[in-house]
Amino acid sequence: MIKRKKGRTNSKNLVIDGVKFDSKLEGKVYLELKADPSIEILEFHPSFVLIDKFKRGTHNIRACKYSADFRCMIDGEEWVLEVKSTWSASQTDYGIRRKMFLYRYRSINFREIMFKGKVRKITDYRGI
Image (cartoon, rainbow, N blue to C red; front, side, top):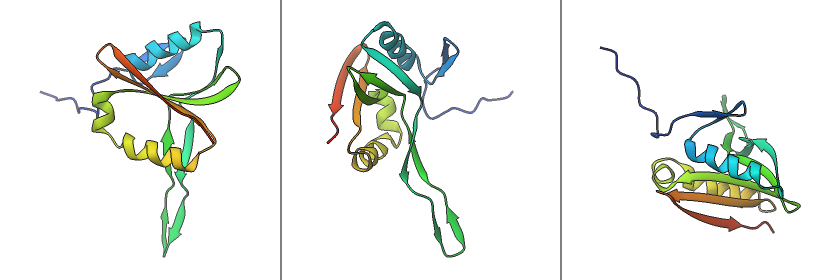
């Protein structure tokens, strides 16, 4: 009997319009963003460097990166959006990466869409 290796979360991958999403919640938010004419999606899964690569002695240390869910224009302002369930946010290193992103990219607007069941909580962190 072969057992499947469990991932970090219980989310199921989803493909909509040829774009792969990491969860059903992310796909649901994509369809909502797509339906809103005031929102233009610029990029899926944009990557941001949190800590640059560096060298220590003879060792090369890789950069630490954060990959958000969406980068889009909302009413003429650039926003980075992250979709999470409260469970997945507590089970991963998301909290520390979010703080590092907010510190390093202070001029970028960041929106966190947190789901607990069917209830959603939106938190906006406006750039400086």
